[in-house]
Image (cartoon, rainbow, N blue to C red; front, top):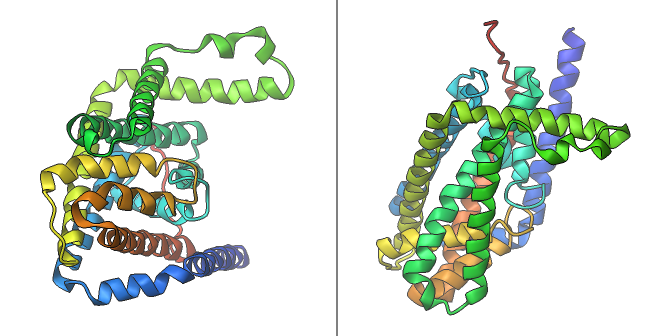
Length: 321
């Protein structure tokens, strides 16, 4: 038993340390720019920004705790914080800024012994987060979108709002889908996939009995988005920039929305979005500097997640009720 635990710790160490090293190697060209930008910034304002951002990770974890509870999975907040940072860590190595959710759901399922419910909770957590972000992005397009003169962004955001709204409504409105009941989906590999999808669908559909949890999670996400904007506002101030914070409340959700496009944790796409949407107010150079500071914070959270993954396996479970 001791040897098995030692081997488990060793494997986690090799995976975590290896991936952290890989992350730093991938970002090696940006490290000097991040360091130079930070050296020339107002350190106090930067600490305010990172303190606000770090606090939001706790609330994000609480949102996951709420949605897990909706699946009758009762996790301590510290365990949800652990899973949140695990998600941050693996986000850096999986496609798009949502790749870490797969790892988060996987680890949640291992810790809770309830794979379907864990994946359903993490998926709903992401869907609610998307919808709240897209709501603010849509408002931003209405209020400040004319400044960017890019109709493709407007149509893309409107399309995503419609898509995610319909997805949530469909998932909550029926017990099972007609596609999953079709005879073609009953046999072989397709049948096995259908069975798993049907279980996941039913687990997500269970939230229709807990609409208050979805609403609370949605409102929490709006609050999280608002505080994140305030954090970025302090990043701009720490670099000596100035921008109307009210306008920033609608620009940053546009940045997050564009960051959903295929990439490695939004790398490149997110930085380009920062520059594109902020250049009219603070210039391209400062917009890029802000993106570098935010990237540094993302890397920092990822490294924390890697360390937690390496040395702190969390044991949680489901009460027998």
